Length: 133
Image (cartoon, rainbow, N blue to C red; front, side):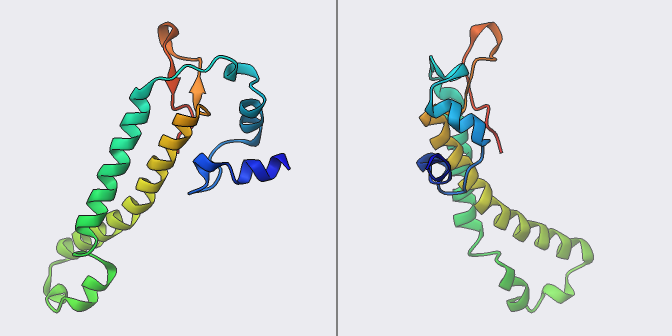
């Protein structure tokens, strides 16, 4: 039953578990570093901003440069090689940005749950974001 709760843990449900099973069990049982969780919103807000920025870039650029743009654009064959490579890189970035946006927004939910808490900060500072993609 605990493995099913690991698989369907709400903060990581969008992209699947992004942390080790042992980390999840320690979090649920409040063992090790999870006994006294402090919250620092800086890394959470940073991940949220990055996720929203990538989602906006995807929403704006993706309708213009999708993979069918190469097939629809009659002038594409007359582009120089560097122009073709640039177009393919922009299209590839747009497709990757969709996944990165989902991963960053999932990181936000994991940070808010407290699962990414770490006591390994410098000068007794709180690090909230030890589980990174």
